[in-house]
Picture 1 (cartoon, rainbow, N blue to C red):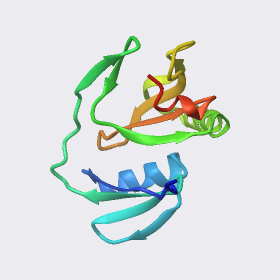
Picture 2: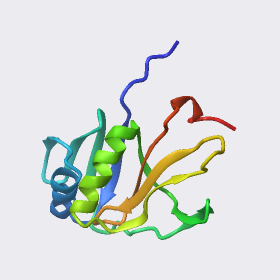
Picture 3: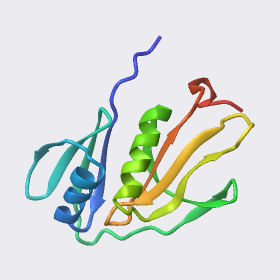
Picture 4: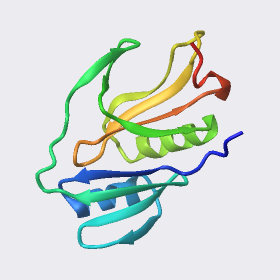
Length: 140
Protein backbone atom coordinates (compact mmCIF):
# COMPACT_ATOMS: atom_id res chain seq x y z
CA UNK A 1 0.00 0.00 0.00
CA UNK A 2 1.30 3.46 -0.87
CA UNK A 3 1.58 6.14 1.76
CA UNK A 4 0.29 9.43 0.43
CA UNK A 5 3.08 11.99 0.24
CA UNK A 6 2.76 15.78 -0.02
CA UNK A 7 2.70 17.18 -3.53
CA UNK A 8 4.72 20.16 -4.75
CA UNK A 9 3.07 22.64 -7.10
CA UNK A 10 4.65 25.81 -8.48
CA UNK A 11 2.39 28.37 -10.17
CA UNK A 12 3.01 31.71 -11.89
CA UNK A 13 1.70 34.94 -10.36
CA UNK A 14 1.82 38.40 -11.91
CA UNK A 15 2.11 40.23 -8.56
CA UNK A 16 4.11 38.48 -5.86
CA UNK A 17 3.02 40.68 -2.92
CA UNK A 18 -0.72 40.64 -3.75
CA UNK A 19 -0.63 36.85 -4.01
CA UNK A 20 1.52 36.48 -0.88
CA UNK A 21 -1.15 38.41 1.05
CA UNK A 22 -3.94 36.34 -0.53
CA UNK A 23 -2.43 32.94 0.25
CA UNK A 24 -1.16 33.94 3.69
CA UNK A 25 -3.83 36.31 5.03
CA UNK A 26 -6.99 35.36 3.13
CA UNK A 27 -6.52 31.63 2.79
CA UNK A 28 -4.56 31.41 6.05
CA UNK A 29 -1.66 29.33 4.73
CA UNK A 30 1.61 29.41 6.67
CA UNK A 31 4.38 31.05 4.70
CA UNK A 32 7.63 29.14 4.34
CA UNK A 33 10.81 30.08 2.52
CA UNK A 34 10.87 32.94 0.03
CA UNK A 35 13.00 35.15 -2.17
CA UNK A 36 12.40 38.24 -4.28
CA UNK A 37 10.83 36.00 -6.94
CA UNK A 38 8.98 33.23 -5.11
CA UNK A 39 7.23 32.28 -1.86
CA UNK A 40 6.27 28.83 -0.63
CA UNK A 41 3.26 27.97 1.51
CA UNK A 42 1.95 25.09 3.58
CA UNK A 43 -1.09 24.22 1.45
CA UNK A 44 -2.93 21.83 3.79
CA UNK A 45 0.31 19.88 4.26
CA UNK A 46 1.43 20.23 0.63
CA UNK A 47 4.02 22.62 -0.79
CA UNK A 48 2.60 25.39 -2.97
CA UNK A 49 5.09 27.84 -4.46
CA UNK A 50 4.10 31.08 -6.15
CA UNK A 51 6.66 32.29 -8.69
CA UNK A 52 6.73 35.85 -10.00
CA UNK A 53 6.05 36.05 -13.73
CA UNK A 54 4.87 39.55 -14.55
CA UNK A 55 3.64 38.31 -17.95
CA UNK A 56 1.43 35.61 -16.39
CA UNK A 57 -2.09 35.83 -17.78
CA UNK A 58 -5.32 34.54 -16.30
CA UNK A 59 -6.97 31.71 -18.17
CA UNK A 60 -10.75 31.97 -18.54
CA UNK A 61 -11.38 28.56 -20.13
CA UNK A 62 -14.05 26.36 -18.58
CA UNK A 63 -15.99 23.13 -19.03
CA UNK A 64 -19.63 22.52 -18.09
CA UNK A 65 -19.98 20.25 -15.04
CA UNK A 66 -23.21 19.74 -13.09
CA UNK A 67 -24.74 22.95 -14.45
CA UNK A 68 -21.69 25.14 -13.72
CA UNK A 69 -18.80 26.43 -15.79
CA UNK A 70 -15.79 24.84 -14.08
CA UNK A 71 -12.53 26.72 -14.73
CA UNK A 72 -9.81 24.74 -16.50
CA UNK A 73 -7.09 24.41 -15.40
CA UNK A 74 -7.57 24.50 -11.64
CA UNK A 75 -6.01 22.91 -8.57
CA UNK A 76 -6.78 22.35 -4.91
CA UNK A 77 -7.10 19.64 -2.29
CA UNK A 78 -9.70 17.27 -0.90
CA UNK A 79 -10.60 18.28 2.65
CA UNK A 80 -12.73 16.71 5.35
CA UNK A 81 -16.31 18.02 5.47
CA UNK A 82 -15.56 19.80 8.75
CA UNK A 83 -12.46 21.57 7.39
CA UNK A 84 -14.30 22.37 4.14
CA UNK A 85 -17.18 24.01 6.04
CA UNK A 86 -14.86 26.03 8.28
CA UNK A 87 -12.75 27.10 5.30
CA UNK A 88 -15.86 28.10 3.30
CA UNK A 89 -17.15 30.16 6.26
CA UNK A 90 -13.78 31.93 6.51
CA UNK A 91 -13.81 32.75 2.80
CA UNK A 92 -17.39 34.02 2.93
CA UNK A 93 -16.58 36.21 5.95
CA UNK A 94 -13.66 37.70 4.00
CA UNK A 95 -16.01 38.46 1.07
CA UNK A 96 -14.23 36.09 -1.33
CA UNK A 97 -15.56 36.33 -4.88
CA UNK A 98 -16.47 32.77 -5.79
CA UNK A 99 -16.59 31.44 -9.33
CA UNK A 100 -18.79 28.66 -7.94
CA UNK A 101 -20.17 29.17 -4.42
CA UNK A 102 -19.76 26.27 -1.98
CA UNK A 103 -22.40 23.64 -2.70
CA UNK A 104 -22.92 19.87 -2.99
CA UNK A 105 -22.62 18.49 -6.50
CA UNK A 106 -23.72 15.09 -7.86
CA UNK A 107 -26.26 14.71 -5.00
CA UNK A 108 -27.28 11.09 -4.61
CA UNK A 109 -24.87 9.99 -7.36
CA UNK A 110 -21.44 8.37 -7.31
CA UNK A 111 -18.88 11.02 -6.47
CA UNK A 112 -21.21 13.24 -4.40
CA UNK A 113 -19.05 16.04 -3.01
CA UNK A 114 -18.97 19.52 -1.57
CA UNK A 115 -17.03 21.92 -3.78
CA UNK A 116 -16.15 25.58 -4.28
CA UNK A 117 -14.10 27.51 -6.82
CA UNK A 118 -12.42 30.91 -6.75
CA UNK A 119 -9.34 32.60 -8.21
CA UNK A 120 -6.22 34.11 -6.71
CA UNK A 121 -5.26 37.71 -7.61
CA UNK A 122 -3.35 36.45 -10.69
CA UNK A 123 -6.31 34.48 -12.00
CA UNK A 124 -5.19 30.97 -10.98
CA UNK A 125 -8.34 28.94 -10.34
CA UNK A 126 -8.58 26.90 -7.13
CA UNK A 127 -11.05 24.19 -6.16
CA UNK A 128 -11.52 22.81 -2.68
CA UNK A 129 -13.76 19.80 -2.19
CA UNK A 130 -14.87 17.30 0.44
CA UNK A 131 -16.61 13.93 0.44
CA UNK A 132 -18.81 12.48 3.17
CA UNK A 133 -17.42 9.14 1.99
CA UNK A 134 -13.82 9.39 0.77
CA UNK A 135 -14.30 6.06 -1.02
CA UNK A 136 -16.38 8.08 -3.51
CA UNK A 137 -13.29 10.03 -4.65
CA UNK A 138 -12.80 7.82 -7.71
CA UNK A 139 -16.31 6.32 -7.90
CA UNK A 140 -17.74 5.76 -11.38
